Length: 220
Image (cartoon, rainbow, N blue to C red; front, side, top):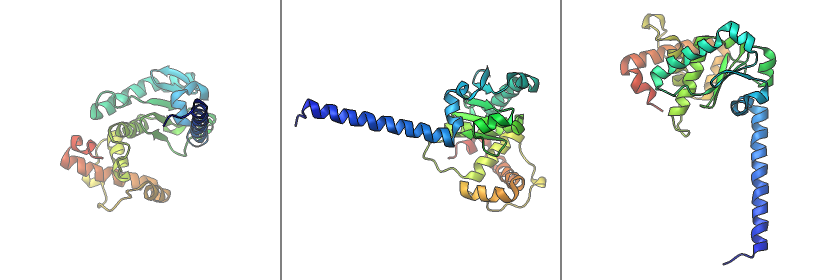
């Protein structure tokens, strides 16, 4: 069946309108819910300045005082030694002021990873440990398929292991079941986040000691 040209034009017009509305809706959602994802594509739109390749900051002078460029380069190198070259190839957005975190609607955390697109570091998270932790999450997102159901305590435990090194068995409590989902992890961190991260770190250290880091990072 051959459709008349007028009907084809009408269908194309409707498709264009629906596509535009979908794109505008997605951008609006990200603008209000996850601005760092948009900032990864246009950091300057959010008042950030590039001080190195894929490293953006709100205040270059403050970043220079903190040695942020060198700190970030070392953190990237540490993560790439484990996950491979290019695994830490992600846009890093650093807020040195609360005004910046408000502009980016940053979470109440030291840092956050947004897939393998962006890592956001807040004023209290400007530290090599936090950088390695969040870059580990980004590297895992790059390696794991998008449909993979990843176990939260394993993800956080691995990020802690990369960021801080292995924990000794003598420093660890007895193993116990840890939250596997984001909801469970969020609920438990509300009670005692430091203890929960330490336990995940311990249990991941045991697994890496037993199976080796190469086997662990291949798991979904």
